Length: 283
Image 1: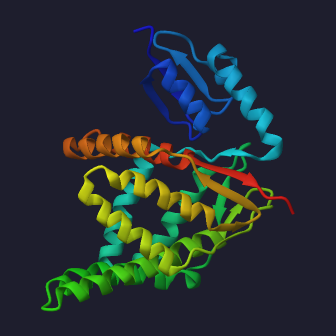
Image 2: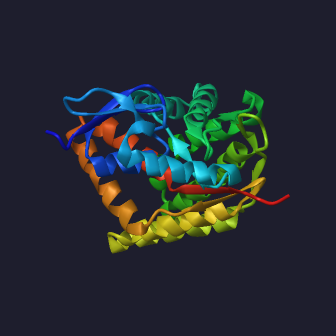
């Protein structure tokens, strides 16, 4: 079909078919760079910067690049994201390998994202700075079901939840402190506290009772997390509750059918990361 397009993303992986509108959205999110190849079905590959529909998009991105403002630019490979996520899940469940695998996974995760303008991110951390976080997450996952099945089920579940929240706050703080960018100039910290994060988690849990309200609770929770990242750059989550809702439903349906899940996972994570807008702060 003439309306179908194919492209190679920043990682060099071939993708498609997609519509022209989807191709434009991918260019805006940063997944397609000007030097990536795009082509209509049955046509010859050409540079994305030479495609008439994409040229204006790249011009807008280039105009914003000097200020460094714009959305994060993810480029997650389908199978790379999928199998690494599976390995991380098993490592957390087994506890002992969790620190090594956790550091390995988050290093890889950071390297798949770039700042506006193309500067790649990377993680600068040693195992000694984070081992207890991943080991603790594994322990909570192990003892959590046992606590929930105890006689004091309510209190025990709340303790397990509080431990999980505490470790996730540490995880976000460690990730922000360790995040670096090519050519330097990136120094971050997370100032969101345990009580604030715990409150958002409780709100998110209660919003599940409304069936769809959790998506809006998650949107505002993400905005709170981004607003509490301080340092050389400011972050803002611009995703809408409606987008979170329908995209999560598509992801859940893909999980039910199993085979399309790796592609749906990458599609969702790419969109999620591209909804985080970054802007340098004045010195």
